[in-house]
Amino acid sequence: MRPNLLILGGTTEGRHLCKAVAEAGLAGTVSMAGRVKHPAPQGLPMRLGGFGGPGGLARYLRDNAVTHVIDATHPFAAQMSCNAIDACARTKTPLIALTRAPWQAGPGDRWTHVPDIAGAVAALDRPAQRVMLAVGRMHLQDFAANPQHAYLLRLVDPPATPLGFPRAEVIVDRGPFTLAGDRALLSEHRIDLVVSKNAGGTGAQAKILAARELGLPVLMIDRPAIAKRAEAHSIAEVLRWLGHVSTDLGV
Ligand code: 3Y8
Ligand code: NAP
Image 1 (tube, helix red, strand yellow):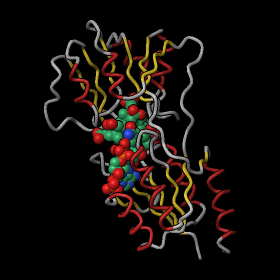
Image 2 (cartoon, rainbow, N blue to C red):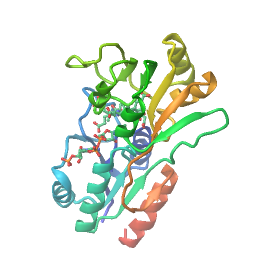
Image 3 (tube, rainbow, N blue to C red):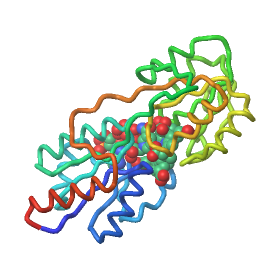
Image 4 (cartoon, protein in one colour):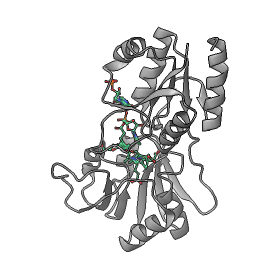
């Protein structure tokens, strides 16, 4: 049976994996949630939108004769990852996650770890500061509980509705971001504090490295726990896994 891959995408590593799969001449489809207006081309045929929970994903795997699933979603896309574990168990479809290690604080970093978005909101209950809130759009309203701050918000798409922050400036931009760009952004906006998810990888890391250089504190949101699954930390590892598992499948 020739491999027919489903890649759950939406990250820099996911895009690089799609390119490697296409170059290897493997059949595959990349799936995105449809969160942003113009998802970037990934180099493989793309499907957009939810599957309808783990049951919907299991049905998709069966209906499309998917032979392997690679979960290359973001570490904070915990629901998608849990659904993939469930659906692949139901359908006995081999699953591996292409994931990136969390960032670790290095010399010069001034990080305060918080366990989740709610922990970051609670930690912002403090006198007014100039805060770069680089957590995207989906959980933005949670932060309206602290209107005293002057926020710098970075969004992939222009906000469709008023954001409800009395003091906020919006930058519309998508990563991967650069150290020079984020260092200039933090300086120009006289940022006192950066709020970030511990995304890992390189695409979102520029603001963290810029904060280190500028001696700025960072509220680092730890990632949600995800159930045990096979994990790879490089595209080469995924391709080896495909070769290995495919042999098991007698191809
Ligand atoms: C739709 C698909 C590539 C992939 C690029 C990575 C890097 C750049 C940095 C900041 C942090 C944030 C956000 C971020 C980064 C990469 C990667 C990453 C963070 C796109 C994309 C999709 C999304 C969804 C979007 C979320 C939002 C999160 C912005 C494509 C561009 C904040 C995560 O408006 C919305 O609804 C945005 C939603 C989920 C988190 C949130 O809660 O709002 N990503 N981002 C995916 C889909 O539909 O399935 O068009 O490329 C992908 C990327 N964004 O090609 O190199 O790999 O992490 N994405 C965070 O880390 O906190 C920005 O501003 O510093
Ligand atoms: P999530 O909370 O884990 O997922 C919620 C639901 O969205 C899932 O149950 C699924 O719906 C749908 N979904 C999520 N990812 C999907 C995908 N790749 N293909 C098809 N459906 C998907 O996910 P999220 O945090 O909203 O992330 C959504 C997408 O943005 C993912 O592709 C992720 O890689 C990307 N992204 C997220 C972040 C972040 O900070 N969360 C950062 C960068 C990129 P059904 O249950 O209906 O199947």
